[in-house]
Length: 184
Image (tube, rainbow, N blue to C red; front, side, top):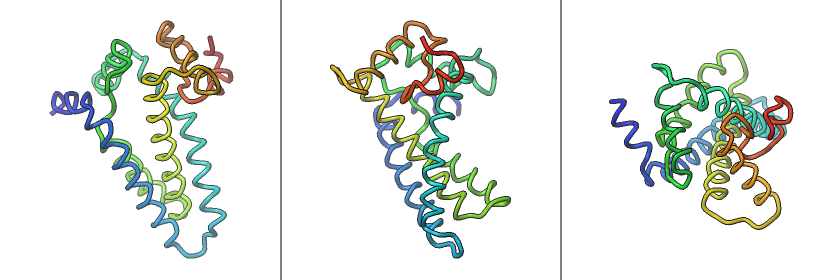
């Protein structure tokens, strides 16, 4: 089974299908949030934005502490898959198309046992939008030649990561690298 998931994760269709599945999950989670009574639209927007911002920290943490760790039994596919990305930055290595959405829905179910469902579902909706943003951003900095602006800056920033694997772990932002002193 693991071999099948590894093979699927390297295909172009898996890469692009993930964006559609995640967009559907975002809509589903927001519909759930908006259907709840006693939670204002402003609070839903705040939770959504908190999830989006939290994703930037999660992105950094997973990249720095999981993708660049020693492969162990439970983390092998993540680490080896990321090595594949470093070998072929223009490839389509990614998590299985369903992974992020299933994880967000499971976490929504778990956290809704402790917090209001509207806040939790809007938080993970924002989190998934952060994941989509990260995926598109990462694709664009590897597949488009940027000459300036933020995209050009981050493209050079990320290229330095591909030369020094322990630095510049942030893909969409250098903020967490500055905080954790991993900026090159």
